[in-house]
Image (cartoon, rainbow, N blue to C red):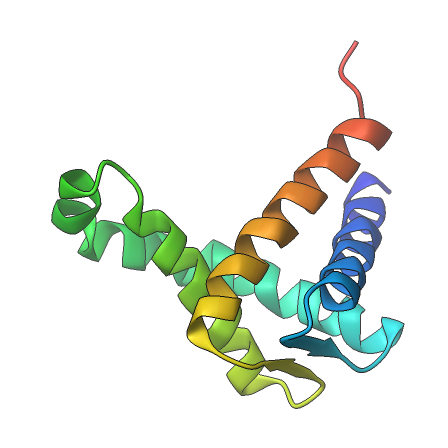
Length: 114
């Protein structure tokens, strides 16, 4: 049940990001659910490989290159799904950061640890 709630929270966070940032577009709530699912799968399967491959660069930049990887994953999902559009790679980086913050805040708010 918690997994479904987090999925909906992520979709709502994505809609909020699309509302706040002019370079990001999501067609509907149903699209946001699919986008959140695909984004979760990309973060689960592709992101760890990218982090491992770019470990030296990430080490040299003191971890800041992770922002580029997160933006790439966000942009990749936008390229795959037609109901999700990101205007530029820079907007993908900003969108990924804002999306991560919103998801983290909402999850902390609704699922507070005792």
